Picture 1 (tube, rainbow, N blue to C red):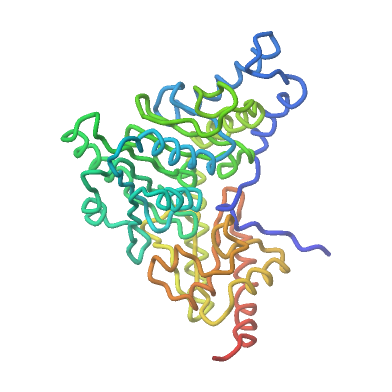
Picture 2 (picture 1 turned 120 degrees about the horizontal axis):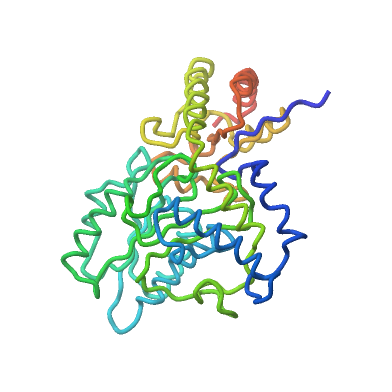
Length: 395
């Protein structure tokens, strides 16, 4: 008999909600016009895009004109970093930009490239709980600092960064500096939308990236909030779409799905309590059942979906494969880096040794998971970890 599969990898992607799929279906074949076309077919599609834009704007507490649709958060992050720094990096003055050591590669790699081009970059360290220290952040700001990008929630350990507090610090500095010498603030909020307040005025951010497939919406669609008055260049040329910042025919079904997913996200807050209950049970029992484990997720300062755990003495890739054979899907870290056998840069930045990092599994729970699935996982894990520890080479 085929084993019932259990999915504990919601940080990588989420299943499309049935209501999201229903909302999208007409725009694949019935309402198929190009939203840039002036005829009725195009205007019907354009109206759907406008409605989705308004839904996102309401959720983020911004103007619809401040929403730029993209192919996902990676493109949104790249547009934020390259677009803004490209607009600011003019003249002879060397500019300085700041990010953290545990950002998603969609932010880190653009920063690395800008650094090679001569832009001064600071990569902020994190403390053992995966959080940037606010005093360290404040001291890192220089007279020539023009841009800061810090992710709201880390995808590997679930740590929540003090974005609002950082926004307040930047605001005070900007009040002294004036509008012509201000610092712009971006956050990648991909992992935060399901759980945290993403009001852009509350957070005091100038740019915010999001993605559809992390919130029970479709893959291949995302958005970037760009506050009115923010200096930014388009990075994808070839048309006049999205205020000349993102050329390309709009993904109407995806945008409609993103809008529907955001609507669900805004009203379905009870799921957070359910997910928190699942993680609490999982953590308590796994501590009781399996010795020599390390909980890398700061339970007090993280979103409820994440449980990043090191099973000392067992190899992470071997655990993942063995669990998959049992019908249980997990991850060894960020899905975007799953083919990279190097130790997680996030865990290393948190001070975790390579050997421990290589024994780590990321469990991320979603709204459709059940206590019965948690119980089954807790039956599978103890004997499996014991077996893999016996098989591990002794150094």
